[in-house]
Image (cartoon, rainbow, N blue to C red; front, side):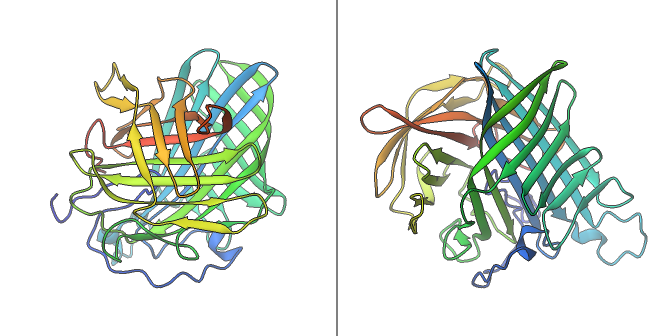
Amino acid sequence: MRRRSVLLALPGYAICLPGHALAPAQLSFPRDFGAHPESRTEWWYATGHASAGERQFGFQVTFFRTRVDATREMNSRFAARQLVFAHAALTDVQGQRLWHDQRIAREGFDIARAATGDTDVRLRDWSLARRADGYGARIAAADFALDLRFAPTQPVLLQGEQGLSRKGPEPRHASYYYSEPQLAVTGAVTLKGQRFECGGKAWLDHEWSEELLHPQAVGWDWIGMNLDDGSALTAFRLRRQDGSALWAGGSFRARGGAVRVFGPGDVVFTPGRHWTSPLSQASYPVEWMVRTPGASYTVRAVIDRQELDSRASTGAIYWEGLSDLFDAAGQRVGRGYLELTGYAQRLRL
């Protein structure tokens, strides 16, 4: 990895540039719902599932903000000091198909922005904004549209040590990170001109970082699962080229309970069934055994074909999709998203 190379991690989305250890977290809301333009990279990542009668959908909306250091001393208002990227995807369960779109623009000129003080990120007619009653996401993509609202039902979940989440063996491998699980979803999904009024559950992650990804890490595996009993499970690992774990972590919070934070030795991902992409020829583990201190689970993709080609924006090809969570007895106990990166190629932006 060249010193000036850049990697984008999902959803540890991390810009890989020379960095330093982050200070202990002192997150304050609503301020930290908003953007942190002084940090190198930042992302708001909403995933969930919604149904309209028998019709089921998974959805993903992600906005990224990246600081551009090369233009910081320029006085021109045309200098691209911040870039804003956005990804959106819709999984049609019955149709066994993933729909995906992406955008990129420099911040400013009423085209793109990431506001400070509260969540308000926009890229042309795509937006994710927080108000007193929750979040609103509006996406008008080529073949689908999302007009969804996410209402909190639980307090913010601070990941790691009170919001400072280690991502590697050295202190500088870290991000500020909080989640909002068990969001109540209402609104509409439009697919190929047909509108569906939907309800469901969502999960939102927000991270910002000066992170230096360890040179041995080629990718990561991550789950964010809303359990049916109101619990929330996060688990991730960073992966070496040979498939072994370089680092791992996560958390579990029972409904109304305290957060249990997982250390690198607490989480074990064991791959099961694979699916090979006809686009990239990458082989993705779409079924996993995930062991945590409290329980072991099976994670299984709802449909296999959920690979995203974002080479037109972030330069990445990765798998990210709606998945079910099963307990040790084989009972389905939750649903959420699984993300697999670094299988098609080492991610570079």
